[in-house]
Image (cartoon, rainbow, N blue to C red; front, side, top):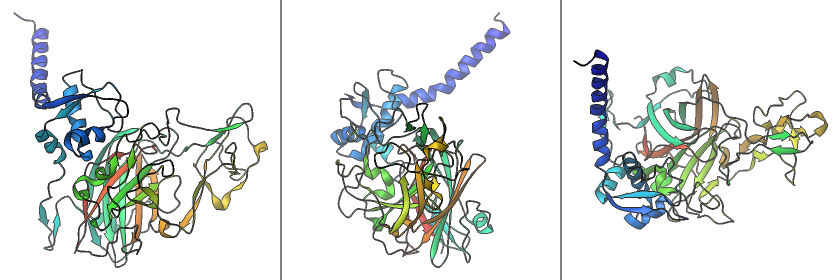
Length: 437
């Protein structure tokens, strides 16, 4: 007769086997049409273009390869779609499997009817009509926010933050639209490449030792971004979101994260880029176009809207060997709060600092002009960011989405950056935004 301990062990093992069996069967359903060994200068979208005639099909290769890797160690495990290494074995799935992956988020949302008889797409962010504007202070204590409906957008695959859930609400009045975003982040990141005095009296900036160019994930800041399709000019944006403009791995010798640009001239996106250290009472208003990478256009399709004055600059001398400015005499010496207000800056006096002291690497002020037309307030408390922002419904700028038709749907994508320059957590596809009627 088996002992009770052995019997219990067998039952546990049997239970584990039964619980794992469906997972393994699900992984085995992935059929590779062919295998590919990654070569130098390959990236997923390039491989997708070769096999599917579509650079945007790379998520199918990503998903299929990881599924195969779960049961066959000869396949690579891809942690970041932007990074693949020479020698890795990838699974090129069948066209049917690829379509099943790419089509997951592309089905039109079924409609639901509100209590007032107005119909909104299921899962859409609905902006509620209000008579009084919220105070943009990052507190969100007004009753109007409590009354607004919320949606949750799950994002993942970001540096320093594997996954997060962004809760969004919106309200509008006769002239402006407002948004409330909250998400959990275990750390408030504000030590953004500060200057630190060395033992020999020289100064240097703290840097991410793994940064190969514009890819700082250690000494940076927390950020959040939304991207909108301007005049529905970007094809497939409503189903693919910003994936339609992502060129992961392109120019990997100088930009390990790739480029972002649209396919053709006239295809424009409106980027609302909140930067917790560099912005002051605003969200940075930017746009996306079809510009490709070159040494003269290192940002490719990403640009800032025109401005009249203000913004942020690096706190450095012309030869980039010293800070140009410092805060008041009683300012912190630990790099906080990450910036110096332009109105408070003082000429740098090296004699006031000891080895190990830090000075923020950014000097900032409010932006005037097109780039500064999104007002905002934010707060970090108990491991949660709360961001409130507002903008005129119609700005008249060619670089902005215009909410001129309150009966039309608008499409947007969401990204969250946890102390990361570009490696953000993202949501595949887009979300729908509508105004309550």
